[in-house]
Length: 178
Image 1 (cartoon, rainbow, N blue to C red):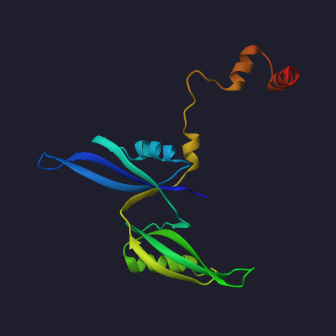
Image 2 (spheres, rainbow, N blue to C red):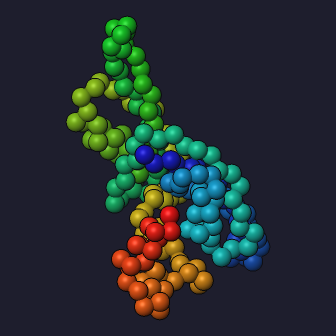
């Protein structure tokens, strides 16, 4: 399950008149921790502007994220599910938040309803709010792949080739040592 972090950044940008203008922007980043979210902010969002800084990082609780090709704005929906408690037999409400991109509030409502149409439990959408989020960065498997191997490390196959032994011989040596 994704852990979403709302990252607020601030930087200075020179406007057309030549004066510096402070820009505040908000991004949503899928990360394992606050530290990783901050690192991703610097890696993904740095604009080359002066005084770039991450002002705050807060965890954002989301049940679902719906992305579409079209839609410049991000809307946060509050959806309440109604279910019956098995033990007490009482109706209970489960509150979930969802994020969807759309060009307007009606389109956002329609998109959430479209995503929920196959849902078997009754639900009610109580809020739909325009957020300040400019972009969303979900976790991608490319992030793991693009980490560079440090210069002092080499593939095991190269080291074994220099030694003139096979990988099977190496594994046998390791078993004997332990």
